[in-house]
Length: 454
Ligand code: BES
Ligand code: MN
Ligand code: MN
Image (cartoon, rainbow, N blue to C red; front, side, top):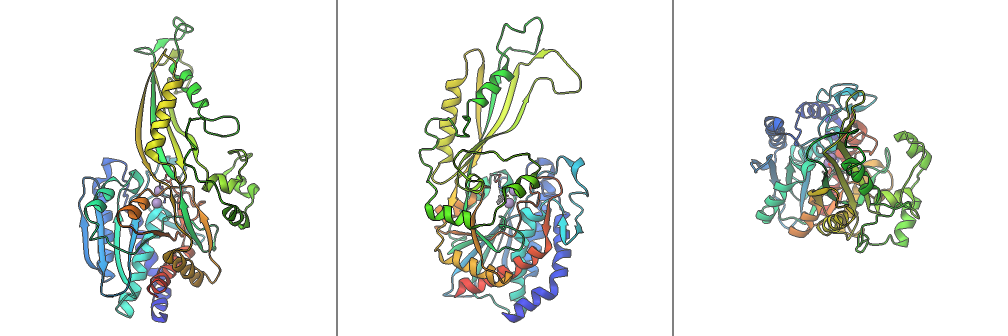
């Protein structure tokens, strides 16, 4: 182990240079425009896996963006870890708010700035380096390892899901190791044991067959924007409870033990509010901020469109109005069931003066992994070794929908050993990743393989 750790410590600067090369590839999965760059991203990952002495490295075509697979299976009788990550990144807009170019990584104060730095290129890359450190020094791993790296996490993982269905044997494993979540705070080793799920819909309200003069027609018809606003305002009451009938039916209550664990974590509402620049926090009545973020479902309008939005004033009644609405779900809510309940309720509160179309965009199931799982314990021990501190356990407000597919189809629990920070601007301008955590993540990964092999 000492040789492995020494190798990581003495090569960290090379790893950072490689990560920079990785971050230069604009692998944005949402738009067709970057199809070529997505392939470049997949090939980059595959090349680094080959250099790491992994076997059976393959770039696998799908209907969408390619997957990358690799393995090292020379530890008979030992468990198998499947390492998952994603090389696709979010779009960069609004570009004007970036202090440096999103695909020209720069290091400032020990942090690397680029799109994908923390979500998830930097985190995913840690595992390739830890495996490489073993294979280049002691020439073997303490257990069997498989990698599956995808390029569609940010757009719903549809093709990976299908691939898992058709390749359960290839991906067969005892546990899945994922670094795509956050630490509780800088320098705090953290295992995440819960993720929220998601239902994402688009609603479109149509009134007149064309935009109309708001003087000659104003007062005679229902304005689709007004109607849409009314609908949205009826989805939540003044206590922050979602009003959709049946919405909470399957929600697992927060246990007393969990409440205690949450409140044992150092948390300042003031600091939290200040960091994101709000005057005051707001959420569901009767719950703390951490409970609201990790263990309670939400409903939010993610975008709204309609009418005249350019400079100046135009007196017009719009023909249409549109809103994107998403709900973060908690165990045991089912995204399909929630989508149906939402649709039924919204239709029931829509006045007959307009027509409405509701489209289900994508979703994912929430996750809760048992704290006494062997892999979770190995993860906690590994991080504690790397950081030299006791590991804390938390849940997370974000979603990684593929985790449930691993659980259902491969019958394998996931260990969420994330090294990011929620303040590292993922999905937003000036995304960055703390290089201290990058280094500690490689060490944690190396220790995990040792711990889980025991
Ligand atoms: N890595 C994130 C999920 C995440 C975010 C975990 C913050 C922990 C903290 C992932 O890449 C992501 O963005 N997921 C989407 C899922 C969606 C596209 C289905 C999300 O949570 O919005
Ligand atoms: Mn991610
Ligand atoms: Mn993401």
